[in-house]
Image 1 (cartoon, rainbow, N blue to C red):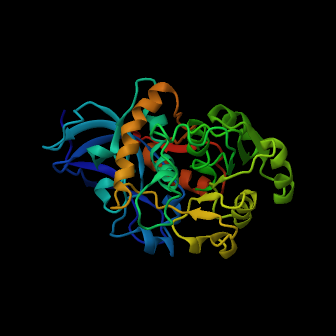
Image 2 (cartoon, rainbow, N blue to C red):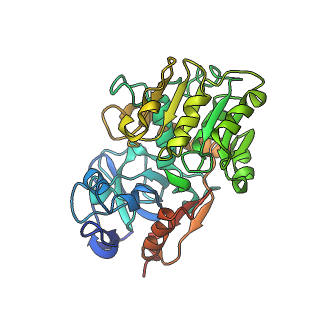
Length: 370
């Protein structure tokens, strides 16, 4: 296979300007990396939020900046030390925007081979690209066992370990924002909490969402879908009936930038319960949620498997993904496919920013860029 010297990439040249398409060098893999021809990349709210301050100061380390953390494609070159992948493999990957060569909103990217998973033939590239970031974020906030930083996980027993598959059987789980990708970042990123709760044996699995997405959430494992437009008081009053009087010891907030959603998760918990919130630091939620009292504990997350305190959990997760997909335990998000490859991404990001995406993941095909 001939690998080109240049490629089309989506590039941000300076803060508070639109992304543009630019010719950039095709990177070459290091000894432990693979070079991937990106067939599909999925969008996340961070891709539009990082354009402007303050998030541009947090997420952008060098210029020009290439976005994209979700991707799927074919391996076209392997590093000298790679044993578990070969040229031609269909893989999904967790990209990274710390350097342009790792980002997925371009035609080629490199990734450590250990943070890839083979895609079963039954799953398309578009579907596979919807999985990595949302799944990783949920897994890290729930199951990462690293001792530091201590509040960046609830440290529940991992669902891929025998004890984790039975320890929570029959206990209720409550997911706020179930049709977001983290609940199935904003109303766009859609699978893992209800899927992971089902794998762990939680019952009932209660979620809040738009009634429009109820059937999707039931297919992913939810047993009860409550209209997200209801007041907190109304929802809280119904929970004891749904759980049969069982205390809720685990809640997950997938829409953390809505203070009342965070408070709903906090108030639904029994004393001593565990609350997962998908933000990286307690300063991003109301103080009364960050310090809930009653022995309740809160876990936060940074959705990267490349950090010293997340790598081990990330490696364990990526060993599971292919098998989960083959068995139907893990299902991709519904896809909202953009036209015109990378050229359609600005339009897709505008839809995300305007909250016009619900229950789906926005996906582009870089190879279709003209």
